[in-house]
Length: 492
Image (tube, rainbow, N blue to C red; front, side, top):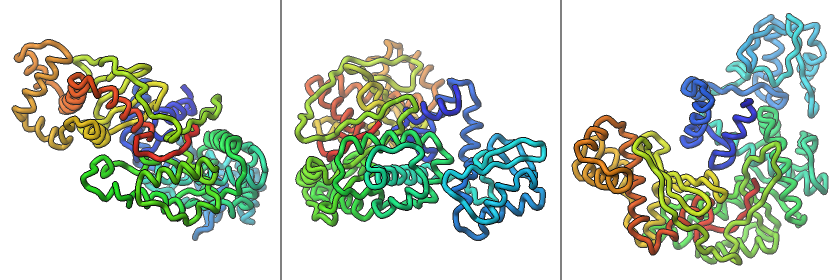
């Protein structure tokens, strides 16, 4: 498996479609991939968390800062100091053989698509993006890198859309994602990332060039030009989510299912296409009316929320509409049983067309369900979401996660007896003495993960009249298509 293939697989399996080291579940997925490849996962993850291994780029060198990165680069060349490369090797740049590229740096002249290439003292050539962005060039610790990249990536899609709709008046290619076009398109976007950040991001993560182009072209194909502005993290977007956050249902503490529901489960759109008709609209404080307003604007092509996912090099962009009020949300999936083993730290709930994995995503806590199947592949519904769904269907909730961890740390007798009953019922018929031996030999993660999963399984097995409803509610939640969510499209 090549590095690009590894990154693509990690992206596909991540919940959002673009992995982040800030997400425990994404880190766990990467660890599983590395372990399957027989690579030192702990060493690699530690290296990733300890440092920012980003390359230098023309966009990074162009940024105005004091001291300027171009000047730092030139000083190192003049002093004959070593540069560290992305592959870990070190070189010294030959001034004479690199004169043309060094002149660009001296003049602070950075035309778009500039190919800066330097020759070392051994005669080998190196493009600028093969140079490691070390501390002297402003590298950080890497903390928050995932959320920063998300902000920039989504903003890049807004600029791509603005270029398609207003500069090219048609579909775009990778060659259209350049500074001149970004500058021309800037009056049509309202985002929270700069053009320099977007250029640097695309140079640092070139896989997103192709994915961005495919997503933008699919959006352009689907929605005619109505003088859109393209929003990400803007005041207008904030107004929409504030209407949801401050809705009467969210304020009513008796309606528990709304209290803990995250914004992205109500509407996970990453970018929004808006006409002037939507600007400063007076959104309703009633959730049903609010969702209806969003759907009506969608039908009129005045407001389009778009959830983005990375698209592979050999894949075509696909689109799916979620929470269309014209499509009945009935139960599509049926419970078909479960699968587990005595060695597993979790279990699988089987349904028509796939399965739902129930396990801890954070060693001893972080219990969640994860979808495996064509629908909502990789989507998750965590402990809180599952409890919300159980309450909606008039079933008792799962036990508190921290309370469960504490109980098994203390070998609480009530929890132990319940665990033995569930294990004996669903996993294997085992004598109490043999179970005690297994229990004492097992890690805390095995106890807490299995206990929570078996508690959930018992609720499905013991409530045949509502278990399909529960499963379908989990599927809807995992794909941000709950009964309380608003309309959006997903490009993947």
